[in-house]
Amino acid sequence: MNWLVHLVTADEWPTDATEIVPPSLAQVGFVHLSTPAQVAIPANLFYTGLDVVLLWVDPELVGDEIRFEEGDPPVPGQVFPHLYGPLPVAAVVAATPYRPGPDGQYSAPDAP
Image (cartoon, rainbow, N blue to C red; front, side, top):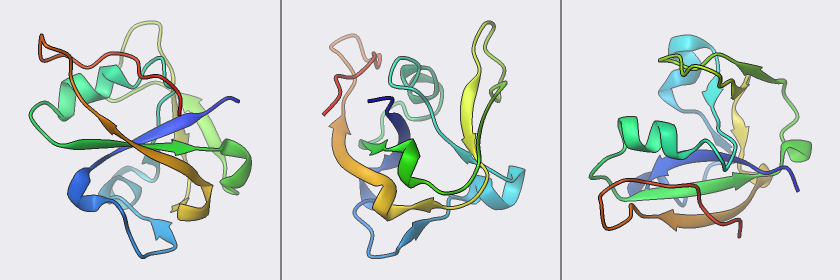
């Protein structure tokens, strides 16, 4: 499976909504996603010290367009998936805690 992941804080999940509409959708027009191999990049940049949950997304269930584009901030040699619409909760096939290692850094997670 070609999973994608979306980072949320533990207080943002679970939700009783049918869609996840993060502030980025209004601010930049898309929902930030990552591949499992690259999710540690935004986690280490923006989620240090937070209780984080990985939402495992089946791209086939998303519905709206997903484009692989330069990140914000750009990471040389990396393009990240961006969802141009809300993330349907029905596309989230698993939610797992995401914890940093003993060194305080996040690494690539194992798929559920």
